[in-house]
Length: 247
Length: 361
Picture (tube, one colour):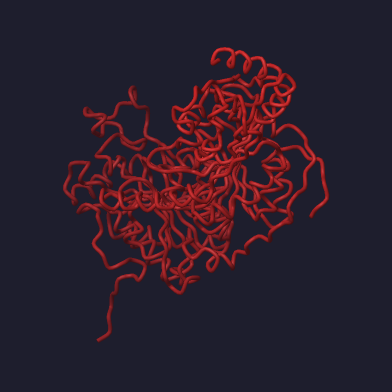
């Protein structure tokens, strides 16, 4: 018998700590599958953030380190200097990247750092229990905005792809979603493109994944996928924001 | 032995770090140490190293962490408020057991403070400015030559303990020039040698026969965290045996003993000569390691002749607590100090010492 499907060697054979319906697992798998297809599982160093995915190193079977809250891009910049020949990436959530780590991500992009950032945007602080994130939508409820986000109190949600694509050091900026098979297929293509561009050392590469947090959104997993489609995508449009001419 | 050269402190510190094998530097401008990132930006690339100007001290220390976790020998520097910003990284480096050499060219505080030399970072350096149970070996040279020698040695201590090591100087030493001899340069560790040189580091698992490495500081289970911290403290206990360094001057039959480190210890040495001319025998304990603090040095005080111990500091008195622990109630401990960036003259120290001796007679 010929197997038609096997799990990627990039993931360890352990249960993840993610909630049912969370799309971290999908994002993990896409990145690890792509690295396996590129033959890079032995030559990659990843940086985990603060948040639910700090323990991504329990699941991804590669060299990894943790980072302090928001600092993953600085840590990856350091790794890149010591290991110029490896694939380097950060994996960060929206509280980590778009709030406390805004300085580090903007300057990594501005310097054209030669690593890839995988940005998981689920519009909420997951690990700390559902507080308002810089990406929480207007009207969306959070434990620090129980009546929903208002512009007056919290300002407007930050669109990271649009912001980073203004920086010339960021050569590839793409937003994808993980809420349907079709979107997931496109997401995997984006992962491949970003990592291939990193291998050419042309500059900073960035992918934003619109993701789910059913637990803190108070929705079932199917409702959460629908919520991405109906609420998130209209505010966070999918597609490419910056790419080199050759792509 | 290399020939004697005249160099500005900050440039000599940078050169010593390069010669000590530090191939990577991440920095941010701050007075009175900005000559260090400037020197590194000029020199490192020429010699096969890498300089990065970070967007903040917070980014610099985290770049240092990433680079050192990936096996690079890293040197970072800043001055007091910048070192304060780096404390998040110091705590993280200690827990993750990643070696980095840190230089603090300190100035007066609190807050933005001033840009003149100060020693008010003693607490920040020796008590752990960051969160959690950890220690950082801290060495406080009295001049540029000793600083050069300690910065040159520091990577070896950091690597042996897999812990950050700090050299604490002040803006006076950073900005002045002194004659010195630079040590012979150690070669940089080449990228392809890192996996064998630091087998715990992140090099991609293929470089280590497929065995992966994780560098981390999160331990959610209290039992695991307790065990981890206890293991760190086994290392620190060893450091307390191996890394204690101090110098003593004239403790025998002394009337009064100073305890002073860094810049003010040089002024105290001059005050000791001035006091001798007036028939007062004064000695000094000069801590070189501030952590571990040389408590054992206080056993060398002649308690039959000495009437007082004076902690001389460029702060409101931060080391004096350690001095009292060393003296352990055997003598009165007094403070002579200036702060805010003011350095007293040796005559001022003499006058204050005579007043203290009047009081304890």
